[in-house]
Length: 280
Image (cartoon, rainbow, N blue to C red; front, top):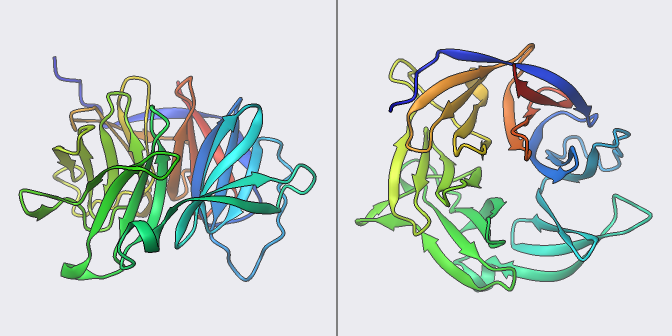
C-alpha cells in the first residue's frame, strides 16, 4: 500500500541545545541525549567551550563521529587528507592527540579527491564521501566503505559507465543497509552493494532541490534538510515523498541526526542551537 502523501507535519520542539556558535557543519548523536557538533571556523575563533552538558564534544571544521570502545570515548575525525582516531584528553576537552591514521588520501585514493563527510555503518564500517574539487561537468565524486583498519570494502563511482555522484556531501546508512547520499540537486540511494535504487530530486513543483544533512528513522524513512528552501523532507525507503517536517521558528536547517526514539536533532546554519524535535 502506498504511503499517504501529506503536505506537512508539524513537529514539536522538545528542547534546545545551545553551542554558542553559528554555521554548524555537522551534528552526530552521541547517546543519552548528547551530541557532537562541528562548525565552520569563522574569524579565527578557536576557544569556544559550550556550557550545555548535552554538547559532548565540539569541533571546528571537521566532521566528527563518536563511538564507544571499552568505556573510553573515542572519535573518528575527518580532515582534508586523512581519517584518523583521536583520543580526548580527560581534563581539557578542546585538546586532542592524533593516535592512529585509519585512511590516508594520498596512499589510498587519488590525491585529486578529498573527503567531505563520513558516516558509521550498522556493521561498524565507515562510509566516506569524496569529491574532486572540480566544478560543472568536471565535478565528480565517489563513496567508499572501509573498515576501522583501513581495509576498503568497495568504491562507488560509476554505474553503466555513468557517474553516480557529482559532489557527494552528507551520507547515512539506512536500516535496510541502503546508502543514502546528498548530492547536487538530488539524494542518491544505492543498495548495500552499490546498485542504484533511485534518485530523489524533490517534488515536481519545486524548481530546485538542494539537499544537505540526511538521516534515517526506525521505519527506514529518509529525512533530508533543504537548507536554502528552509525545508525538511521525509521520504520512504523507496523514494516516495511522505511530508515536509515543520517546526516553530525554523531557520535554515542544515545538519541532522536522530536518536533511538526517533527524536530528530536539527542543527541550523544561522542559529547557535540545535533543536530537538518529536512528532506531535
